[in-house]
Image (tube, rainbow, N blue to C red; front, side):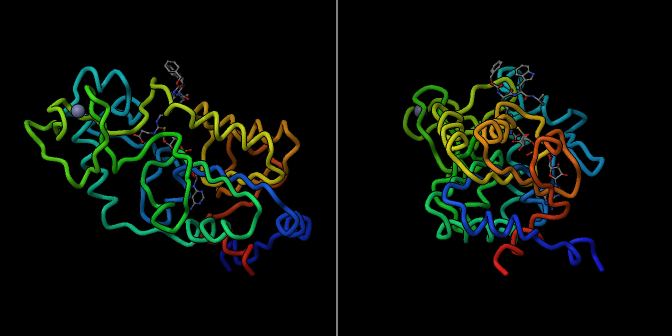
Length: 248
Ligand code: BV8
Ligand code: ZN
């Protein structure tokens, strides 16, 4: 028997899930793990690219120092993602959109798999790997349209260099994204934290805000995290196996 086959949702949590009006879900890389997207940490691994830890290659400093290298790293990841599909964890969360008066999905992920599963109005705290942004005119372009000219794509509108429309370490989050997520965290009565090691800020402060506003906070993760002690309930296991249990 795999651990989650014996896992059941407590009566209290089922009751809370049934009664909840305002629900906030914060996801991290772990919700995409069962789709085949490598996580950054956890399970003993730390993503490294050409000898650089990912928080070095995915940093504001690297964009300034070596934009072609950043594009090579993101092109590689888009290549991996292009054939991957949402998993039952993404699908369960998408199905929750019609179950509550207000469901807010906040993700740290840039893979677009929540939207592919049918989730709408996703708050993408760290941007999206499928978008590029112009340094000059700020125009956004879809990555599938990019034309690479000496390893850096140029803007169709103004000819300026493009960058991934992703928040790198040391960069501010998209204007309003964190504020929108925090406002919903202040008013939610149930908060799920799914597949995040909860070490990256300010994203990791969202469940702390929910807790402070007396929401019932539930973590879904095969491992304990920096957040586990703050949660009201920790469901130990995989998102793709646990989240569908709420539909049974
Ligand atoms: C900011 C996009 C204000 C890029 C990402 C020094 C200078 C500047 C800032 C800082 C600094 N020191 C610290 C900071 C703050 C920094 C930070 O928090 N650093 C941490 C590492 C200490 N934050 C920032 O820089 C943020 N900006 O602070 O702006 C500012 C601005 C200027 C100057 C000062 C301050 C911006 C952070 C955003 C960085 N961009 N991603 C890219 O993808 O390349 S963050 C990156 O980590 C991803 O978005 C990822 O989502 C995120 C968090 O990781 P997780 O999602 O949690 O994934 P992880 O792999 O860690 O964990 C996976 C979990 O899943 C594990 O727990 C595992 O057990 C679990 N799991 C595995 N399988 C499953 C599962 N769970 C469920 N089911 C499964 N099947
Ligand atoms: Zn432009």
